[in-house]
Length: 327
Image 1 (cartoon, helix red, strand yellow):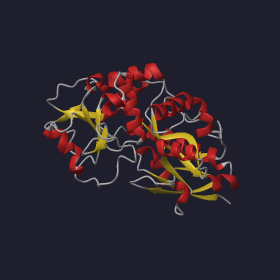
Image 2: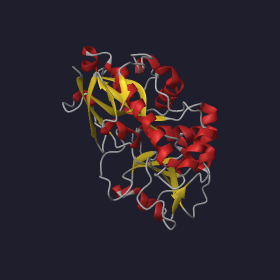
Image 3: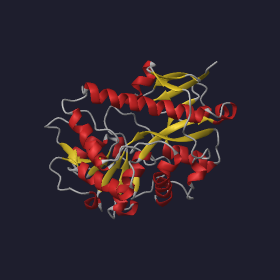
Image 4: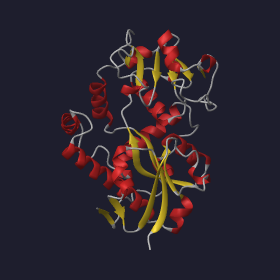
């Protein structure tokens, strides 16, 4: 009889075949629940057995010795970060290096994506001490919560003035740039008044990939340790069916091409710019990226000690499993 596994994930398009049952496992009764906000601590919730989790917060758990959640080197959210630094349309800023000495807003200090974005700045010579940082909500629609997470330092890392939305501060000149994982509503309108700092971010990101060899991972799959203790094969099985869902979805995009009028051109460009296995799961394929992220967490002062790849992913490289089938 299949084992029931309750999985909480964001509404990523490539998980549609999994959610609809087009991809399934003979060993798992997978019950997918789409969530807008990540589960804060998978090990403490009674609602789920596995979930999409923050890489940064997972690393914090491992550092603290909390082994209630086991991370799988399957990064369900990846993305380059050069595109995630925005400014006003009339700003003189055109490169990440020009952010030295500037006032930069972030949506959460320890967030995995913002950690990777600061890493991109560090590669251009702009470290944490080289700018003034403000953590806050992106727009009025976002809640007022603690986004410093204990990392505030007067004069260096502070809350956004008056907890005002950072897009308002950016428009008024109170900030020079803002880090954002997702573009705010209206950003893509021709008259939005905003743009990316690096306008040709695709060129910058392909150059970055050529230098480091990976697309940064922000979120990964996590499974409760107690579930794996009882059914250790779940780690491989879950990772494989998520990967299969992505393969099925990509094949459908190549056939139906309905996402945008030029999706075929985009798919062709990706094939030229990146290797076919750019999003491959598994420890061996992702070890350099994992090691770099751990180094950034330490260098940026988020973790007081450098964690090894083995500490973060104790299961090792077990990512192949039988029993998966596409409907």
